[in-house]
Image (tube, rainbow, N blue to C red; front, top):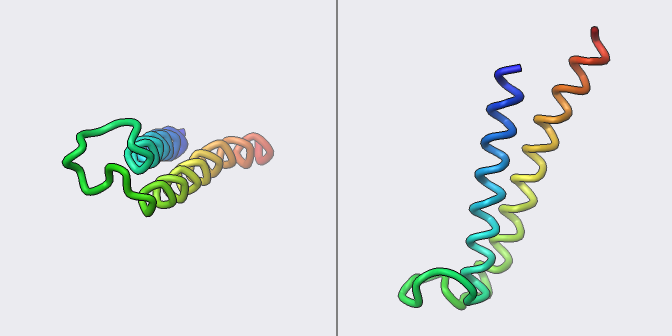
Length: 71
């Protein structure tokens, strides 16, 4: 149960950071002095980070399903 919460928390944080990086790359949020601001590379990096976060969240939910099936 504790591992599930940790995975869900980490996955959520990573997903949120990916959204922020993606939006900075699109010039929607963040200071104009940031190296990520209006940088197309960070649009792509943000999407990749979001996918990693969603995978971690999926693993967190998967541990719950595996535990239920073993009971």
